[in-house]
Image (cartoon, rainbow, N blue to C red):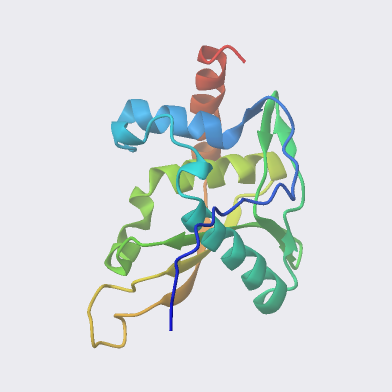
Amino acid sequence: MKIQPYNFTIKLPSGVERSAGLHLSDVVRSIGFEMGYIPPQYQGEDISASPERAALGMAWEDWVFRTQHPEVSHQPGEVFGGNIACSADGISWFGNDLKVHECKLTWKSMKRESELQNEWLWLSQTMGYCLQWGTNLARYHIYWVNGDYQRGQNTGGPQYKLYDLEFTKRELEDNWLQIHNRAKMLGR
């Protein structure tokens, strides 16, 4: 028997077209680098730097909304805050309340779940989506790939967990002011 590796490069889908111009994720990343929330070695890296991880995240997002949460309008399109395009993963209605949904597939330890308030990048982007969609409610769909890294324990493997977030009006406005100011600095 002969087994020969075959080189293959993953191509990320172009499915959902993004508008030209400034996107919320670009602004948040810019702030994240300056504030030290993102290590400098990742500057200039985009989604194509790790297409395998990006593909897993996209597949997870598609699967979870299609099969587990069909009530969520997946990729509902862009909304704009001035000239900043905002593309939430999903939205849904809970009674009269609109909720923004964000999917995360992460290799971070689930031990950090009690510190989600420190995930500045995730929170800033989510708050931006909430403000532009006119709600203060969000839900995270987090797939902790390695659980809490405790091998042989119930929590040591993959875990899917939901987290509901409720932001204050002040949090949303302060966050958007920071985003808006950064967008002006970026000259867009």
